[in-house]
Length: 216
Image 1: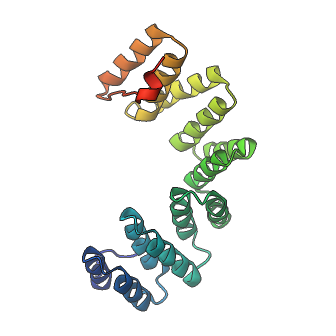
Image 2: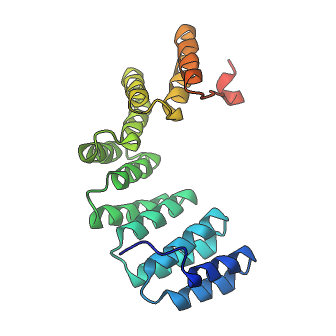
């Protein structure tokens, strides 16, 4: 199924209702005009999610799946929404559906891995990250996930190697710089800490620690 056309007049009318904070009216109108366009409802659900309208967002995603429960994009998007509101068990279920209907999308495996990791299913999470990397060797989310697995297992040397690999893959990806800086800070590796901060500055990234991360 193709992505909903956000330039469509009907979609724009829904957006106007949302902008006026007429959320109930927007939901009803979206459902009325959607017909068989499940992606339109999914797009509206994403708007509600960004606005923090949790109930309205959930309603749109559910309505979208009633129209097409085999659309991997909708399962994936709904899964991310559920993750954002800490419904991890339900999020895991939706991501598994996304993987079922499109097993060749690496980011689906990576996101499923992230959810499994949050649920402390470390071995299962690792498998999903590896699946993602089998599909796309340079998948940043997959490598980031493996680094998180290593950190959970306190395999700090392995995590450090993966973070360094991530920097090689994408010099402007901020996460590995911050993660290495925090690791070096916690291990009192001052020279390495200074090096990673300078390396980050070269690509115009700033590393900032939270107060509880810098307290000795």
